[in-house]
Length: 433
Ligand SMILES: [Fe+2]
Image 1 (tube, rainbow, N blue to C red):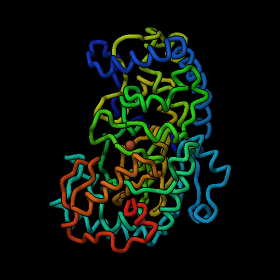
Image 2 (image 1 turned 90 degrees about the vertical axis):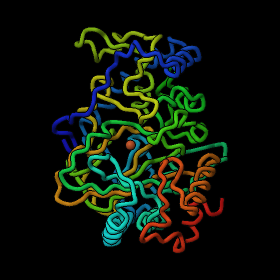
Image 3 (image 1 turned 30 degrees about the vertical axis):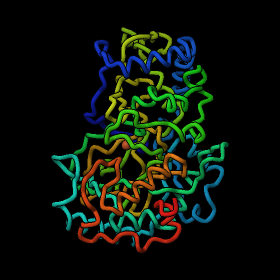
Image 4 (image 1 turned 120 degrees about the vertical axis):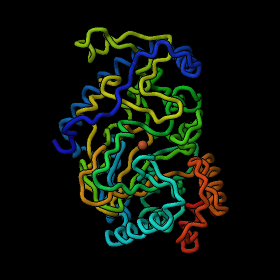
C-alpha cells in the first residue's frame, strides 16, 4: 500500500499510568469538562467515536497515501479549488499543492537560502543541538520571496477560505506568520517529532475558549463536530501554557514549501489523513481507562470511565500533543500514518491545525532536504495583533515573540528587508494593520 511505514520507528510510547500526578492544571481541566458536559455524554461520545474510527481507519488503510488530495497550483491559482477538492481536503484535513513556486525558481531560492545560512552560521541558532537542521531564521530574502510569491499568497487565501465564519469578523486575506526553515543533511536520523498535533496541548481542554471549539464532541455528538468553524476557533487561546512549541497564532493550515525533492524515508513528512474523528478521539481519551485484558483493547465498551487523576497520555503543558500506538490504539497509527507522495522543489504540503503528523525519522537520500515552514493564517483580531507586532519587531531587529530567539536578523549578511515586496505582500506582512 503506498505511503505505509515499513518498520515503526523508535518513537516514544506514552505511559498511560500517571495516577500519581498531582498537577492541578490537568486535574482541573478534567473536572471542568466532566462538570460541564457530564459522564454520560462523554461515554456516549467515546463509543461513537471509536465506532467511527473503525471505518475511518479501514478507508485510510485501503487507499494508502492516495487518500491525500493532490492539486495543481497552475489550475487552482486561476480557478480556486474545485468542489471535489474542497470536499476531499475537508475530509482528510490535508493537501498537496504542486508547483506553487516554479521549479527553477525554487532551485535558485534553495541555493540562496543555503548560502545565507552558511554565511551567517556563527550567528543563527538551529536545533536539535547534536544535529542542527531546523534554522531559527525568519526574515531572510529567500523566505520572503517564497511567502510573497503571488501563487503562494493566492493559495494561502484559498486555504483560509476553506474555513467559515458567519460572524463576519474575520477574512481569508492571508497574514504571514514568521516560521523557520529546515535544511537536513543526508543520513541524519531525527526521532524528535513523532506523531503529534500542534496548536497547543493541554490548552485544548484547559482553556475555556479553546474547549468551546470541541463542544459537540464533549456533548456526546462527535459526528457533529465542525473542524472548519472559524467563528469559535478565532478566539481560542492555544498557548495558555507558554512554551516555544506553542504558536500563539491560529494557523488554518500549517505548511511546508519544499526547496528540494523528498520522498518516503528521505526526509519526508507523514500525515494521518483524517481530522475530525481523530481529534475527537484524542480529546476523549483522557476520560477512559483501558481494559486489563489486552485482547479487549479495541472494544470501546470495555474501557472504563476515569473521573479522577490526570491521565492525559502524550500531553505535556510545554510540548505539542503527542500520540502513540499504545496510548491511542483505535487510531491504528502504525497502519494509518502515511508518508506523503514524492515531493519536488516548489511543491507544498498543507495540514489542518488539528491534524496528526510526524517528521520522517530517516533521510536516506543523497542531497540535503530543505523546506520553508509557511502557514496559511487568516485575518482575525488575534492574528492581526500578533502579525503587526511581529512586523514591528522584525524591522527593529527583534525575532518574533513566539520564537523567543534573540538574533538581530537585520545585521545578518545578505539581509535585504522588505523593499521588494508587492502591495499584496506588504498587506500580508502587516504593513496596513
Ligand atoms: Fe508539527
